[in-house]
Length: 131
Image (cartoon, rainbow, N blue to C red):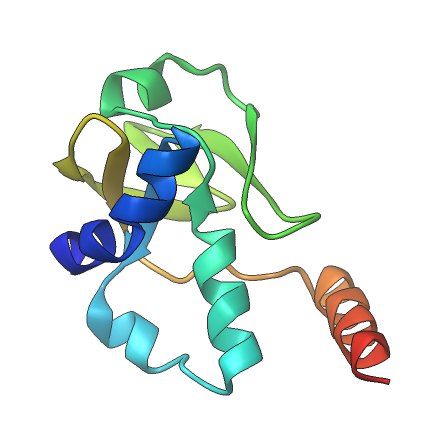
């Protein structure tokens, strides 16, 4: 999966000199959530942070550090529960599944959810753009 993502984005990110980090849930968890195209886009963008983060970066952040994502208005809040690093309450279960000079992937246990109120606002704006 990560190699496929790297091939898809290599040209774009090479031109823009952009680094990124993906917090990737298990395929089985993700497949249970796949819906229409706009939902897939939302799921993808809320799991992407537009800068490179290695595991050493993540564990050095203070509790309650906020990371912006590629989904406008959606952030990931870093917390710790015992020895577990969490994003919005979802455990990071595999550190640095893949990384290179511009792209890092960390495995997470669940899909990062849009809070109910934010989801309604996002749907409102998505609907508004179609008219």
